[in-house]
Amino acid sequence: MIWVKLTNVKANPYNPRVIRDEKFAKLKQSIIDFPEMLEKRPLVCYTEGEKYIVLGGNMRLKALSDIGAKEIPIILADEWTEEQRAQFLIKDNVGFGEWDWNALANEWDAEKLEAWGLELPGFKVDTGELGTEFSLPDGDKAPFQQMTFTLADEQAEQIKMAIADIKLTNEYKYSETFGNENSNGNALYLIIMQWAEQRK
Image (cartoon, rainbow, N blue to C red):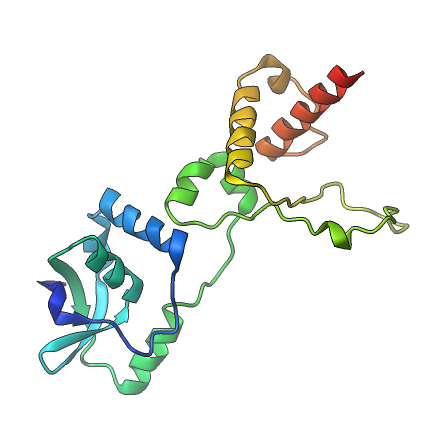
């Protein structure tokens, strides 16, 4: 790894990956909050004349430029063929594997995950597709369901606070879970049940 002037590093014109708006803002903030991360994950570049062309880390380069960085860490891949460079450019942006959403929901702080750039599943429901038929097919049915909704920021904040608050109560500690291990789902269910009880 070497440190070079940011002005000597150029973005790859063939980079197929972009990060826009809110996600890009989060990337910049993550670098500001944890700059040491760059030393463990330098940009991958190759030399072209007196410049370094980025193979891996184009969005980090843009973010570093935006926040006014003067020097950045890079690692050189000058020994690679053109074919290997093109292959890396694509493979470095391919996401392998899947997130264990249940583990993330129960063991990680959602706000931190979002601040670190992880896009959590949204709460989206297209009411136009719901129709009026709610019967389930005959036979065995899954004991759990995932539900999605779209929320405004203010609504999401209120729900997050309500879930966090109810998790501190004895009612939550001893509430019926029906075998569900998702703590946020159990908390939301308890909130709804308390609301339903108050309506009676």
